[in-house]
Image (cartoon, rainbow, N blue to C red; front, side, top):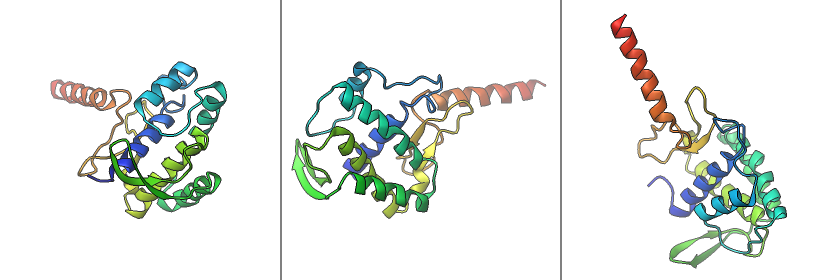
Amino acid sequence: MVFIHDTEMSLRAAAALVNTLPDTDTEGVDRLVSQQDFDAYLDEYAYTGTFHRDDDELAAVRANRPRLLELWSVDRDGAVPLVNAMLRDGRALPQLVIHDGFDWHIHATEPDAPLSVRMLVEAAMAFVDVIRSDQWDRVRICEADDCASVYVDFSKNGSKRYCDTGNCGNRMNVIAYRRRKAEESA
């Protein structure tokens, strides 16, 4: 395990949220427009606390995406002021909690804080772990020619090159295979 469970969950949720942006989508589609899109995201990435599931909450969560995307465009040292600003803006006050079958972990906001604030602070706390453990090289952008999706490499050896959003690894392997076959027959 590279990161503790709650850190990994928050990193996966942050990457998935960023990957709803049209800039990261292989088809250029915004994947977080409707309440149905938002519900699907929340069904996959569990958050605790108060939910309103209304247009204002959706708009606030959508507004987090560019801030989170910025983390994938900087190096480790450049991430520090971004993460600190997220923690400061969310008035983070880390505390240990235990609930819902999860062992002790950290929450840094009150359960009734706005969902967008809780999401941003949880992501920032996860990135704190990435920075502190000197694992920033695992924060990546897909290497596929036609993809800009983001991910965090959770593999043991840190060798993952492609995201999981667009079948990029398989597509690039097929392209490489066809290229080798064409070179062999030439």
